[in-house]
Length: 222
Ligand SMILES: C[S@@+](CC[C@H](N)C(=O)[O-])C[C@H]1O[C@@H](n2cnc3c(N)ncnc32)[C@H](O)[C@@H]1O
Image (spheres, protein in one colour):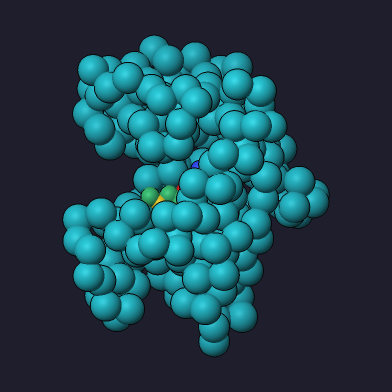
């Protein structure tokens, strides 16, 4: 499938999921999220993955002085919690329907901005510089190495030198990537994760969860 056709398919299919039951497709441990519980699950994600890791994320900078990038924000579940910690948050998602839900969820948080992007690059953000970049439960749904690697190169373009891109990929190697679909993402082995970092100008300094569904990567810009 041509690259642009795959990106169109991502937008169409995620728009459909957002219209059907966005919160369920974002966090499919339940179908009947209340607004409050859904956003509180984002606070938990930030408590677990961000607040425990401020040494690597902030590197001595005050969180309120930091500008943060999020890829694949969905309905703003994590974006909203990030906006409570950091000075500015800029988030992208391929789905305009998800972006609309995120903007609703983020009303009253002027330090969080959400953009619909093309599903692979960060051109919508121009040349702005970020101190930290984050993505959770997104690359798990991308079966194309070209798309994932385009994002990694784009984050490298916008991140300040030494800055951290913390994200997760599918680590369970028994999983078959759906190369033309939008649900089953490409699995990465530990050497795959290190090699992608090297190709894109990062050091894959820490990796946790190799072989498991949730394989977290700490890429520091060289
Ligand atoms: C499972 S949801 C997770 C949302 C959010 N990260 C969270 O944890 O609440 C996956 C999100 O990734 C978005 N997405 C999927 N493929 C994408 C792509 N190629 N570029 C940007 N966003 C993408 C979907 O539209 C959806 O909002």
